[in-house]
Length: 262
Image 1: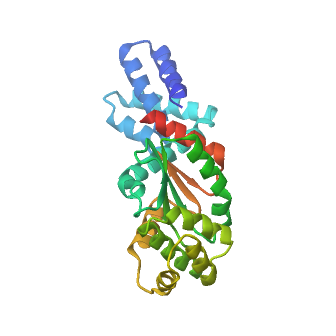
Image 2 (image 1 turned 120 degrees about the vertical axis):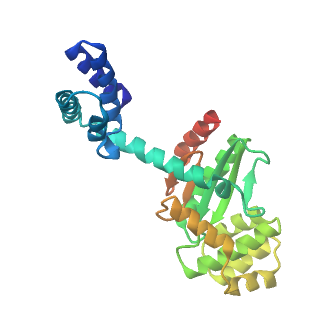
């Protein structure tokens, strides 16, 4: 988009042929780049120190270019959305990437962190497990932080609470796998999965029956809402947020991008 905008500046400079025009051409290019933020062209025109006729000419050139090349608008909108998402992630990065107790897998000192919001009743979350396992195997500097987002059924809440118990007891990975292998979030299935992970059945039942508000789950809900979650799974990698089971390749590219950006 910036390359397209620079052509607007060049066109204006060629038309007028002086330094002031070239300067205004660059500003007009910036106006094109900022178009989607709303009223950018008009805002520039009001701030310009040129004559009204100059401002009108700049507005006309920018408008004409946009009308002739409307394909730059979707690109600009996507870039704006990406920037907005990155800002939201940055505002919550510490909360996102700090796991609840032992609810994580992978590197002790990661270069890249993938945050996964999941619900044990979510089939798409279950379908994502092989991709996550492959990514962990191929990226020794990757950590996956799991966040409970029990939004599908009431029984999802009980499963999430036992998952937090597993994280507290250092048995999260085993429970995580056993829970998805169970195929449902009925209380009996949750207790059975807890037993396979080495968690006391009485503790698991007590966690399911606990009617108190769980701050860890509420924090996850607030974070998901802040990131524009549309359901589960929700993945966060670097400055990017992905709704749904986006697949191995998409997450791999996001990991590589995050690693390169430092």
